[in-house]
Image: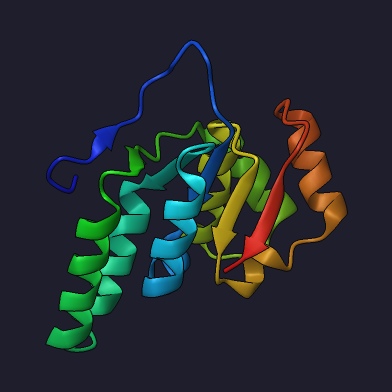
Length: 153
């Protein structure tokens, strides 16, 4: 976990939750602006998987990209809640059966957003923001989420 990042904890007065996946973390300036604008009224969730995926992708490019990612995390760490991807097998299997075209990592991101009852999953991944309304509605109904969107970053 990034130094000084907050761990997710339940609060009595819960704010709506927004989950940022690894693809969204690669949109450096736009991500910072979005998180700054939303963090007061929303809990901003980023998982260990998202951080690891995004960092690994940056490291495979070059030192400048890697440094830019480190600066992004430094900039947003005071606004985010870092969460585990500790989803149940049942939830993961439900997501995989309804969304068979998405990758395993994307299924984990979606299942994590559903588990934490997020109202929005922010992504730059076409496979996620392109999911049908019916698919999202079926999953939300099954897991007790009344309002859920997947937004293209």
